[in-house]
Length: 291
Image (cartoon, rainbow, N blue to C red; front, top):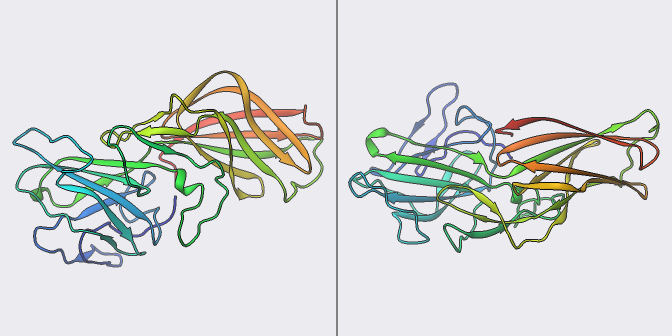
């Protein structure tokens, strides 16, 4: 994820330094605090200028929560953009006199269904960010948050975002028989996963597309020997092509079974030797709330 500083506000915010933030809020307007999965305070990681989250709000009838709908909510998919210090909504969200549920998600999209919106991670996550589009990796990282039963008297609405996909960090290791440097044409792929899924915005759950075909996904490079890829949660219950490393015209391909759990980061060490048949795979521990 990217970097951000400060609180997501649906009003004017003036950032303080080493003291409590001072800000002005239009009377009756809602103020939102955004926390990234890796953050313990809203002043820590992870968004950067130009990022957009979507916000929904629903109103209670007495003590009964209204269901989230594709339209007709108190607030409907309000695009809220970060400029490096302040989040600005396309439309202000004002408080109801009743309790409310507030939903947030990233990256911003135009849902066609609240319960079964069809979505996909990118097949090439090495593509860079442009002025008009997220990078392939960033566009594949779905985050979701919900604040339940909030009222104006509670003060700020805190949205603690969570990763809903799976992340794989792949580390290339030189074996005893691998004496060369990793060449510039090195590429890493993850095989045999379905890249398409349906999103339930009410729960934030992502479900693998039961009609989707297994494909290979190109990972993004973060250093000379480290690659990352984001995947749809799913289980591979039989030995299938797993991770492939290509370099200098040679392909190193592993096979394995694996269960990709939602919100979990896995680390895999691939030890390479001079022969594609001499390859070792070591799977490390699980990490949640990754950066």
